[in-house]
Amino acid sequence: MADSTAAERRSPAAAYAARFEAASAGGGLRLAEIPFLTRVNLRVDPKSPAAERIGTAIGVPLPVEPGTVAGGGGLEALWLGPDEWLLVGPDGAAPGLVARLTEAAGGEHVSVVDVSAQRTTLVVAGERARDVLAHGCALDLHPRVFGPGRCAQTMLARAGVVLVADEDGFRVLVRSSFAGYVAEWLLDASVEYVAG
Amino acid sequence: MLLIPCPWCGPRDEAEFHYGGQAHVAYPENPAALSDEEWARYLFFRDNPKGLFAERWSHTAGCRRWFNAVRDTATNEIHAVYRVGEPRPVSA
Ligand SMILES: [Zn+2]
Image 1 (tube, rainbow over the protein chains, first blue to last red):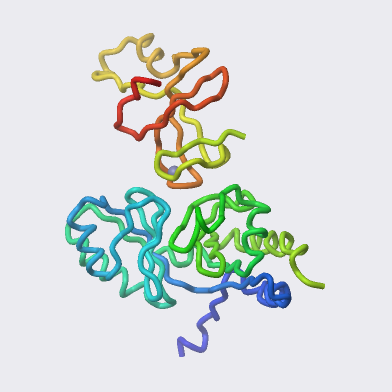
Image 2 (tube, protein in one colour):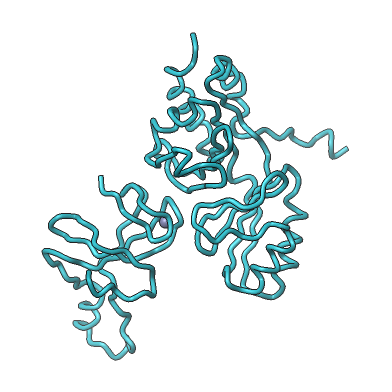
């Protein structure tokens, strides 16, 4: 009975699916949303025993080099600050992940917060991805500086984002309330790279 | 646009930072013992040099950490950045 009345969940950029698809038709650029990923914010002293226990518990050692990503596939740890990480996993993984982190933290001074709904993930991929982002991002996104395995909290078109570099492009983690704005901005910045 | 080298993230646009005023202003050891004038001096009075100035910055749009920078107030050149708790570099 509860199921029949439950609201259907809707991702922050769901309304842009068709326009993303149209902009991706030319082949030089791929825009898409990856909805509903699990994201857990973790704060812990990287030198503490808890940090080591957490790395073991989740199978991903917390990266200590600024702006780097550890793990991959099932679970990634993104460096956000010297004592702060964003753990990214598949849809539905949050309760289990939070439980594992909390258990590994023991009684130590650790913060674990499920922030999955805070952001959504936009994919900007293809050979034109860097050109599109360069319209509104001051970072050097060349692969020799910002290749796979790197991430950065920065600004894209004046909106705060987390950028993650992948093999074929980038993921833009944007706050849900900014998703529409950044989606519109990406589509506008893409016009000159989209065939037709 | 200034390029500010965050001690954690490296060089970033000035727009990613917030300014925090003069660095190394120590909180009074016994604030209750201060006169109104001494308290006002602690709260409101800051150096205003023409030249090198140690000041606090926060990388609000990046790693969100506070750090210190030695900036030349006449040229805007940043001579050094260092993390909170680290001493001001002697050369800067
Ligand atoms: Zn920083």
